[in-house]
Length: 361
Image (tube, rainbow, N blue to C red; front, side, top):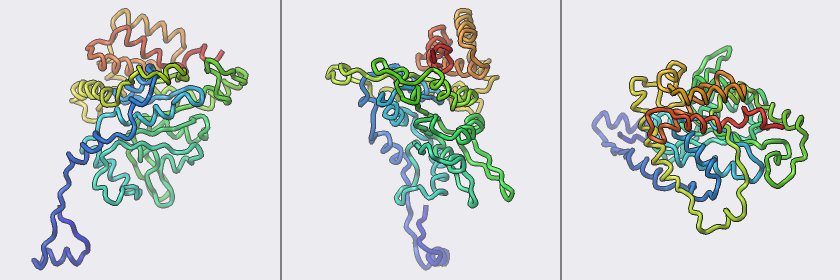
């Protein structure tokens, strides 16, 4: 690639008056730097093994996830480490991400290519236009800036209802079409949603020690700020409990590093890429259509009976049924199992906390 400073240099070059320096971009070096210099790591997190397992499943299958727990339980800390276990960007993904960040003026001056998966964490006061994009001079919003990366929404019920509802369409289609009187523009929005929330207004509804001061009606009203259709689009509902002092202070407990977790994620993703090699627009289990779910998520008699019992007991929707099968497929991939077993179904159902009737007494 030739580097030109001005149009005069371009003219001089074509007239044979002046030579231009050749700029070489080593894409391998760009990506290797990302893998070797992680600023955060799952090794820093003690305890929370169930939550870390859920995030591993989410990373392996590209699933959306919501973390529910009291203040100080570590929801934000865990969410910020999500990009460290995701597969590295491919060159195609890096070019797409670079274009979006360049258009919005967010590409660093010395950067030739975005080599890290984006992690966007907008404040809950954000407007719907800032989230989805648009405006007088149309620009990509936060969901497009999170393309090929993570969109983290902390304190999800504090976001305006209208803002949350605009997420539903791009979470399904993985793009955002904005229509105005003078233009129609389409932005890519293939992001992984990671959200967090307290279980109630005071935050201590599920705390093992501190007492919640909220009534059941208040708790239910708080949870109802998030619509059912939006929750149905989130594959994993994970309860986060506070870590006790003994676990935090123990020198013997060594948490698993992000690098080791990422190795399992990469193996699971490799299985999925092979599985969907005939479908160029599908790269992970979360993107499966109903037809592909029927093809690749077949259950044995025991698994079918277990899922039927869970569906009836928790009164799950048809969309939740598809989500459970997708997550179970990912759990099986992490276990390098060709078949989805009953234990995979059980774990997938376990991570649907907000669907359970007895979650709010």
